[in-house]
Length: 362
Figure 1 (cartoon, rainbow, N blue to C red):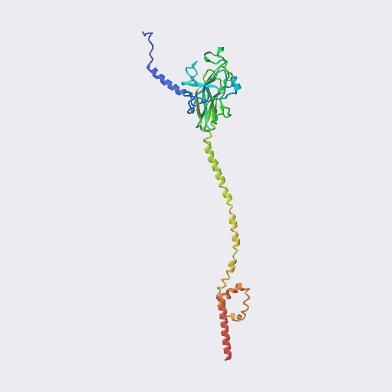
Figure 2 (cartoon, rainbow, N blue to C red; figure 1 turned 90 degrees about the vertical axis):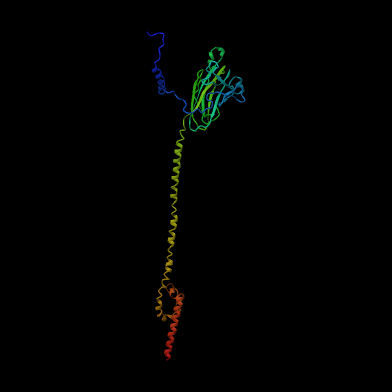
């Protein structure tokens, strides 16, 4: 008979199947991933070292972060309004044991019996313009009107002040807490419970600034803010980065085409051609051709044979001065040929007359 006190043993197949079932469950139901890129913040967990803020007492800030606040006038601060908050590290051992969400430390800022307006910031460089960013942080507050009233047991909130807790991104990298450029998250109170705050913005500069802001309205005995596990990640690359290269070439191409047609319109330099026809009109220098025919007339050198009939006309040599028709006769009588012909005619005439007179004497 089986022993009732003996513990049942697990079968080996069950021990083997269990790990495989866990792996399959993780694959089918993966845990959600909030960050879609590397964390761009320095010291996002607000761990050591903590650095004294220069020129201010009771102000120690986690490395990588900067304290800021808006201090009131002397009259306001004397009444407990708009005081400069105190900053220091919170430890896991701090009562009631929930002041750190993860790691060893968290950042806290606070003021007792007064209110304040301020928080911490961090400027982040080397950001792509146009990238969409998400800033997240876990925060918790503790606000107690008066501990002696007994309504804040175990360091919890009682009759709390509205905390106006929010976070923001300045996409231009500015350091002005009042800047209209800051994109803020909705406000939270986050009393006694770690609460995640989240905000997104598109970078408009290569530097951005992340802000944590709180403004407890009442001058409560306890107005404390705790911060842990912050992140700044890129959730989407620049959307306008790819279209710009595609747009620029098209813009450069169109002007080149629009400019090239202009030379063709300017090519109506056919005006030179219109000027060139004028020489053709001037080319009616065919007048030289009319003058050139004169040389052809000298070619009728066969006229010397006809010079024989000239003797009768030799006597009217004086009329030769009528050079009005010279355009046609000048080539015959003018020049050296004309002189030679006249000399021959005179010689022949003299010779004939001499012969005639000689016969008459006989």
